[in-house]
Image (cartoon, rainbow, N blue to C red; front, side, top):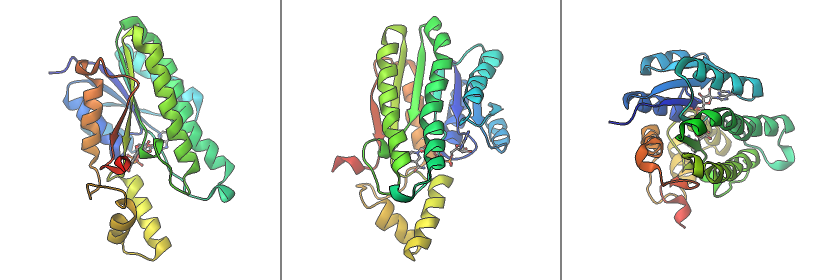
Amino acid sequence: NATPRVALVTGTSSGIGEAVVKHLCQLGHQVLAVDFNPAGENVAEAAGAAFFQADLTDPEACRAAVAEANKRFGGVDILVNNAGIQHVAPIEEFPEEKWRQIIDLMLTAPFLLTQAAWPHMRENGWGRVINIASVHAQVASPGKSAYVSAKHGMIGLTKTAALEGGAQGITANTICPAYVKTPLVDNQIADQARMHGMEEQEVIENIMLKNAAVKRLIEPAEVAEMVAFLASDSAGAVTGSSWNIDLGWTAQ
Ligand code: NAD
């Protein structure tokens, strides 16, 4: 079994974050689940995790989340930056406040959480930063300027953390999934179906899986398995890298 560690996971009230919390709890880790949605409390409790409510677009809330993990569990060993949102509009019409919200949540919050968690990891000589980016950290799609920019930026943050952490026992890696079956994607399927006057199944097959070699959506649990590997002692030599779980999307 894995050495028990303390994990802080963000964006845990549904989807990938929920699956990661469940999986890390099952492996025997102590987990602090962080989300702005109070529904995250029940999700965390069901998995055996603690919950801290925080809107991660607020820098003070980011620091408070790590302080909570320090107080409860003595420090964060594994940080999983997962919270994210999407907004689709052409650059010409993209609202500035949405741009800022997405960059704050998906790039600045991971930076601040890494910064706050770092001293404990350094002192311990062991740490794992696992950033949930996206296939949109490697390639772009029209209408997703803020999301694509935040996710590409996350790869840069991860590589820098890997270089700084190398001598300190801290690794940093990015996971880049294509479409995963979560509420975030369900909403996009519904929106696209309305927009194109298509059936939802047609949207999945013709739009979402257009670039996929494996023609199915990804399960949240499949991403959680990859997080668990990167969080393990076995992955100590793996750092600064991006792990695609993208159905073959970027192979072409
Ligand atoms: P989701 O909507 O199910 O979960 C996102 C979580 O983030 C929710 O629990 C939400 O409450 C939380 N959140 C949103 N704004 C927040 C805020 N301001 N403060 C704190 N928490 C906040 O989505 P998901 O699909 O599980 O996505 C999780 C991550 O995976 C995101 O970063 C997303 O970009 C990434 N991702 C998802 C897919 C996919 O296809 N679903 C693909 C690639 C990458």
